[in-house]
Length: 458
Image (cartoon, rainbow, N blue to C red; front, side, top):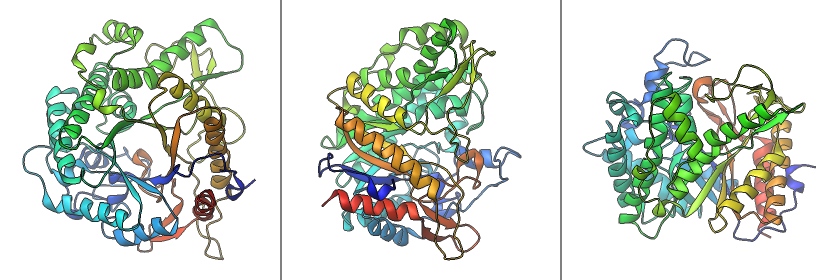
């Protein structure tokens, strides 16, 4: 079955089909458009930090310069919505003080261009590009940065709240805390467990404060958070110890963020563990009122967290001692990630059960394959289309079984800077020729996605 053959007839006409991107991945280096430096600029300066050797001032894919072309591509693909993020240092170069009108003007052009094409903007306030000046004072581990984030959120609400309905405070806070401050593979490149725990706590506080700031100025908008949720699973024989490890993984990836951001509480087992092993007490009384930030739930899902019993534990999840990383099935994308389409249904049904009255959006789902144009000039990304077919069918099945699913955003619109991998990995449904003026070519998967969207509206 191809993507065009997926039966969408059970979905309501109001179901939203979109794509997503993030500011730092497509907009380019700080020399572009008068943007201040961010922590990813700093990490790019560290030899060996980016796998393909991408250095500072990378061009992204020149989305700022090629905005009109990209907007027209979105229209041609019949998108209902486009999910994007604001680069904090583009609109406030150092993360405090005066706001940068040139940066604000760019996002005004983007938002107005979307609306002119009947595409719903979906805005994320933070997708990992913290202003460098704020990292110098401790980054997200410093509560002062939470205060500054709330000021930034309020100003963005004042600027864009009249035209943007959907707001997300954060994208994948887990990655910010653990990949940025425990393993150090993401910016700011810190490897310290207590720091990661402090960041995890302050990010939950920032969600509460940021959503309050947005709603104080634009009470009519819908605010949520986007988290990369997962279904931890074991392959092969199970043991009680390995099953206990899955509970810990579930706490790190799912429960900490959903309970913190949507309930204003923390899982007691993790609070106890963090205090014992990291010496950091996370007081849930400090979270504050989260009621302004629970209008919708964004679920980013690519694959299950897959483990096998035995081994010496997973360094990414302190406290796990009886599991080791594993794969599942025969399919792997270029990142080495297994295909687990049943898992997205499992997660959507779980979130619906735990938060039955809050609309859910799949805010990211996609896969990475390096297909380029063939002799006919077309990009035959067959594996990507096969992957999307299976995952979208699973999303529809989840909806049919009761998931409160209101939309699906495919990741990503454009090939781009894939963080620590540099430009070596391609998630886009539009091919970008990095060597030839960033020329855009919609891949076959993009054309199939377009046809699926059009068919769903008939």
